[in-house]
Image (tube, rainbow, N blue to C red):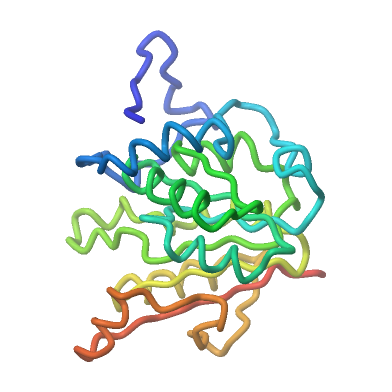
Length: 239
């Protein structure tokens, strides 16, 4: 979905709804015939349209259950595996790139996953406008774009303002789980998450990879080459 800007309603710099620099660039790429077919067939069934109003999660999933928000699910393999292993929880995935949305639609259909819903929209706007405070059991942010060039670091998703918004959406005891294979970004994540007063680190610094997060083929290849992977799991304070 290519976003367009309406110049008749551009917020001023003083508008509190002004969003930060986008953390992604839309490079849709070519979709395979299977991705196109499953996108057309499944998105009307499992897709959630963006609108600037609080989302009723129980209505969206057809049941009341702990809900995990996943931001940037890529091609969806990890999301599908986690959702399949945790059937008593709901998973709301956000991804802007069409091929990835089509890929996860295919996995949902093939595996008959009943606990996954998708949004193809900007995550900042979804969190700001649609996710009610205290409504999430967890948030997953796995391997976001590292924007490794220093001049591009401002585009990184994990920034203080956005982390604060995520923390507000977590129920007490809920968790925010980030993972990256870029050490510089891991250091920034640890600094940003540690600086959020609503969150407490579940580990001394970086956490052991939780069993629910599967190793991807890309990650396995990197580990064999000696590349590091850093997980961070922070909890919403209950006091």
